[in-house]
Length: 129
Picture (spheres, helix red, strand yellow):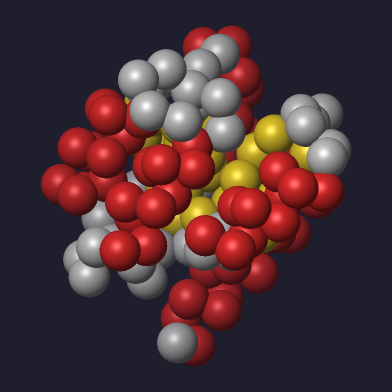
């Protein structure tokens, strides 16, 4: 079971997807925070400093790339692994996110074993560094 003291954080425009992700992670022992816009996300991230962020690209208020840029330039948040979740399989979308500073990415539809593996890897590497 994966258990962490700080909350994990998800940003997505679709409420149903947020609820599904939240259920998966809560069932695994994670604390979860969610946001439905980029602006809301940045406020919560700065306040809560989560262990991990799952971030969509197409979100209201500020796109995922801009949220990611804000995360990686801030000394207080740049250490938080960000996993991009997207339905867009175009290589330029993935490369852009990774170039900005994303830890990894998931292509929708998301499968629970793959999701938990990537999250576990991100949290493990965060502990090392």
